[in-house]
Image (cartoon, rainbow, N blue to C red; front, side, top):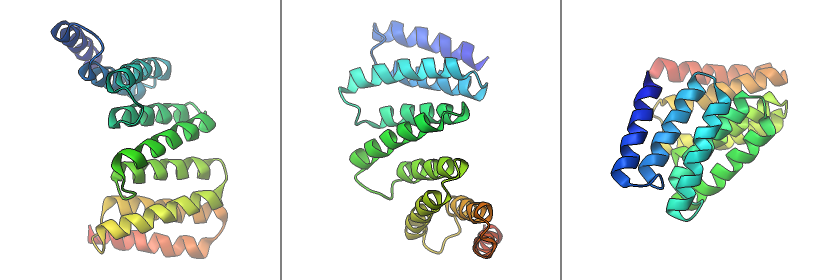
Length: 188
């Protein structure tokens, strides 16, 4: 049903703009990709994302744009879901590089989310030291942003760190971070 609406929206927007080379078209295609991704139709999702990416690059004349970063991030999620962790990491790195340029601020939520996603892949691949390094970097920045406020993003990263220490067999550190997570949950 949602896809039917998006397809109709796509036709209307192309008619309005007289071309498919418009940011609105790229947004609709990206949204269609999200629906396909949710349905686990990864090939179709990637096709829609690629169409969106091509339009965004053409319209903005650069890869250094938020719309490009969003679409690449969605593609990385699909690659990860397909088990192609290497391509997912490469794509997340492109997203991270773009975000660092366009936001010029390492504390931007897009940068934190991308780094957290990359750390998750490192964890899944068994590169626990690299995962912990990234998770700790994200946690430091998130704590600097949110201070003593119990925040869901701080909670997510705290739990990710605890799970990684547990996977590593470092139960003492895992317990410390699980306790921190419990304190955050109780404060929320």
